[in-house]
Amino acid sequence: MATGRTHRPATRSRGIPEATVARLPLYLRALTALSERSVPTVSSEELAAAAGVNSAKLRKDFSYLGSYGTRGVGYDVEYLVYQISRELGLTQDWPVVIVGIGNLGAALANYGGFASRGFRVAALIDADPAMAGKPVAGIPVRHTDELEKIIEDNGVSIGVIATPAGAAQQVCDRLVAAGVTSILNFAPTVLTVPDGVDVRKVDLSIELQILAFHEQRKAGEETAAGDGAVPAKRSSADGQGPDGDVPAVMPA
Amino acid sequence: MATGRTHRPATRSRGIPEATVARLPLYLRALTALSERSVPTVSSEELAAAAGVNSAKLRKDFSYLGSYGTRGVGYDVEYLVYQISRELGLTQDWPVVIVGIGNLGAALANYGGFASRGFRVAALIDADPAMAGKPVAGIPVRHTDELEKIIEDNGVSIGVIATPAGAAQQVCDRLVAAGVTSILNFAPTVLTVPDGVDVRKVDLSIELQILAFHEQRKAGEETAAGDGAVPAKRSSADGQGPDGDVPAVMPA
DNA sequence: CCATCTTTGTGCACACGTTCACAAAGACAT
DNA sequence: ATGTCTTTGTGAACGTGTGCACAAAGATGG
Image (cartoon, rainbow over all chains, first blue to last red; front, side, top):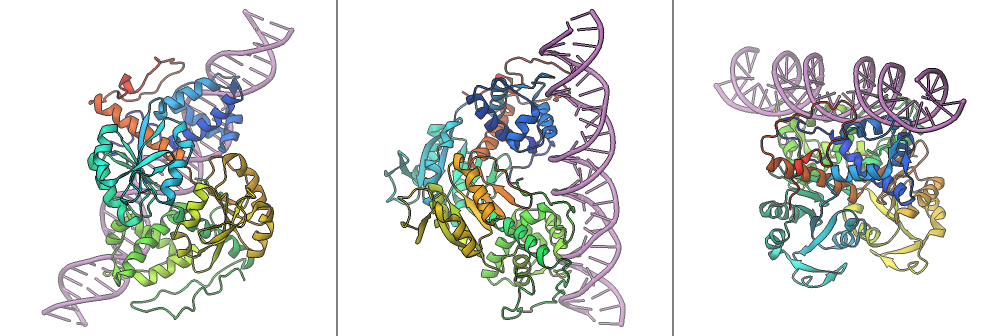
């Protein structure tokens, strides 16, 4: 997880577990769907199914927020939507800037679910002077030179980085210096930020590699029931064989 | 986490913790960078810094893979790159299909880091007949009707869903029925899959909401300096004022 | 060959997260 | 009112992940 570690004093204050926070948006989405269908109340069992979690976990999660919910009945949908929204800070408006308007940046700018929930794209920023002024998703792209001014003028505290990896840290530094304290990073790099700044990362490549790991394991179990043959340790500089690896793994 | 739980027999066989698996790609990236700079060996301390984790964790992670590494020296970069690649299953080729070639799908298709590491875009699939044949990122888009055939012909086991939320489950079902066992889902929906299929999700909206939560909390702490007031258990019905926590701070 | 110095690999303790299972709360009918 | 039935809220047990701290492994120099 890339969330800034809780600083010195553990998870004090209101102490909602991080894992719970990460699920609240899920519950909110399910509840919003119910709300649109005018469903008045929902049980933990039903809601949990809709959110794809188990009901005990859901109830415990909600218990951190307070004692909403009525025994024998369930939760009032509208009320819960409100409470979770408030807890997540979605009752206020969050101006967001997207830096790096390439394929991905443009896709993010066009993403609808963005504005829907309290988030507003305040500006699109790109380093390419040729992009400046051109509208993307109806918003004119501004040049990187204006970054600091844009942040300050709009009171932006959340920045999205969709630049190439090489530019990400530099952009990040400038965002932070200008006052941004939360960053969503799509660039495949580790960002270093000062204390008090939260970074979350979204990395296609990492996700695929994790899937590949499990995929390989499935394939392996299938064929070689009881695998074996662990490679022996290699001492030092060894150059490794010309390529003759991938021993007997391969799904053959 | 959306990874399919290890099925019945616990985390047996090779038993690499999920948390470790999720960090391996990070290490691999850092190691690849070192490799390109022809750095021969690296200590756990250095590598950990590059990957943004702490060194004890890194060493423990590597210990699950085996005893690579030489005391007093560190790890052989090339060798580790190879070992991690193999562990992640990146020494083989993974054909991938992307379904839903809208803004996001196109951005993903254009994403370079895709093909770089063992993954190959086998096909782009979209439901819009008008898209069929048009090349995106140099690959002609195929129509959804051909989905099953494409999967089978190419032996695809990993699918990426970038469709609107409404279509995601249906696409998912078809992918799974055709033989896909790992899915990366960009659509904002909970996907239901049979046992043995892994799903990972990437959700912009959720990430932003998590950031907003922490952002709100920072804003709250800022004003109410000496927080003091420990959460303390709340007995029961507490009703609490319309804004219990975050003492009416609300920036702006 | 021995001493010293560096860095790994890991036992241990603790924090966090998940799940079970059940008492208590409340709705609802009689 | 009282009893029954549903569903919450949570204590307790368990499992997973993290970080410290240190012994053992090996390099390196005399």
